[in-house]
Length: 515
Image 1 (tube, one colour):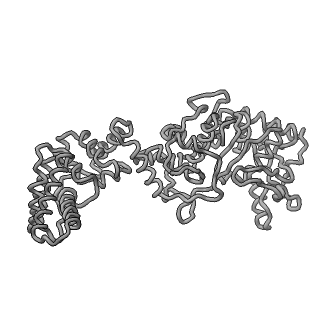
Image 2: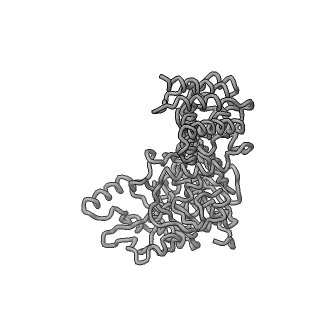
Image 3: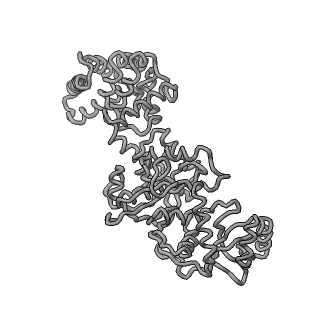
């Protein structure tokens, strides 16, 4: 979408829980559209359901959005021309607009008690009829209804829906509601008249949502498919007020590989958990952006700025499958971009690794390493093998041999004692214990062993023998130094471990293979 027109968007969560993947995706899509078009990104807290509000949910929400880099232009703690940005602070505005609908005949006061409504629903259900309201109170004369309300009789305000909801155009699903079923069923006395104002004077989601989006000049609303059935009500309300509705785009549900809606057991954990486990915000955003968004970029790996530049309202229809492997891949790719000395991310990862080691989980650090200076040592280990970094926990688990008291336990199946001796004599001889010197010594060991083997059988071709010797040398070194586990190159590993640690491990390995 070319940015000829700015698109003010909003993210309007309820503080009834913490920010999860689905909610983060909604926030991100609205943020990207606003930034792509030069519009404002608003944050609005829809806290009218006080009974379900979680005490720290709002503060956690703000922290998680900031961590993800989704800084709002207007909203709590920022302000703006259309505040306040908590619905609990906008009650008077909603009541005024409910009164306007009452005046124009698009709404009515309902005095039915909860007991009567419950009995009505049960009776209708037993008869196989819709359990919608029967409009008993819609026939009360306006003067009588006003008088009863003025005397303090408890009631709600309902929207008087049209006989047929208006069709509307969805940016994902096209025309919705064309040829739809009537919103009222006179034969059954069933009417879908949603409550706008509750008996305590607070608005329902339907009224507050429409009023706020209009007054905050929102032009585009991107939200989950679960809100699609409510949209005809909202469009009807816009028409009742005489307002132009925003453009709607509804995105599919997030499901696991079995097609089940995400839950805490299958990746739908709150966003703070990704932060706690060391995921980079740009990796999480990149992952979330790909959940139902179609792009033309040659690579799925995109920085925050690249996401903004390439964003269009082109979403796939239907549900989107979430796979953890994709997140791991993107985390790895973004880590490769950022894990260079001097980058704040590198320093943050080092701090996270040190903190985990200090806690004793998942590795217990040897005293020798602690004596060397833990932070500098951790930084060396990370620099040596950034290509294999994904998260702090996984990195420590895979590189435990750098930190723990280590004794080789993997012996060669058919150890070549002469080869081991050559490796022992040559690979630990450099005067300068650095990668360059170690590479040279390893090459010397390979050449000496190669010459010896070719001398034993001059008929052999040099190339395959050389490959076999190299393989054996590096195999024995990796078994001796890391029990054969993956990691950095052998010379890089040896430089970080240090001469004394490498000598001890090699001696233990030779001893193990001579038994």
